[in-house]
Image (cartoon, rainbow, N blue to C red; front, side, top):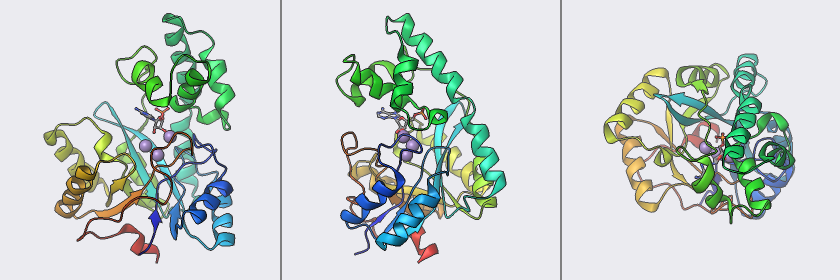
Length: 277
Ligand code: AMP
Ligand code: MN
Ligand code: MN
Ligand code: MN
């Protein structure tokens, strides 16, 4: 059985392992095919590919683009992209550009509820200062003893409706799909089970994504329940999407699902990795 993991993060975004250490961990866990999908940045792809060559792991280049669709944040995964494509690089740079200012705003919001110095604290957690995410704030809140763990930090301070949440306008869905396709990649919907859409809104979203040229959906991910594997397998079949799977691994300490430890895709799907094997 082929062990495939097409969604993971390194220190280039908010993972805690370098691209090389991530590939080494994937190899140790028996992964045969992997993709690095850092948030809004492809800087780690070259290093990960080199490491994958050394370890004998089949490597697929990737990225996870933050988009705003109908007022909500949706993550779009691009696989098999040319990481040197100029349009993609410029688009990602544009997408990242608001992060530092947003981090300052989040810090001000946390100040209002008596938590000072959150910006400086979060910046101590980043390896790439231009890719400061809510995860880095969560790590700071845990490190400072304000929250018990990452989940607690998100639940109490960092999700919509909580005091540290700062709405942000990311790339459009249309642009993200276009950048990925023009860079030779396949665009897919990351962890659909995480979005709080009604069935009606989900239907509109899938239609629009498909119309824009999106062709893939993550079915088995570290964010999904076993019931959701079946639910999104059905969506993949109904909409004719190729299916992907990936742990969304960030850290040995934090991630519920380790890289390379997910169950296989349900039957009757078109695995996206067939494009590269
Ligand atoms: P950002 O792009 O700055 O909004 O941060 C997104 C990061 O926060 C991603 O790594 C997500 O996986 C992580 N994240 C979002 N919501 C949660 C949550 N409820 N619990 C843990 N991590 C989360
Ligand atoms: Mn992340
Ligand atoms: Mn995501
Ligand atoms: Mn991710």
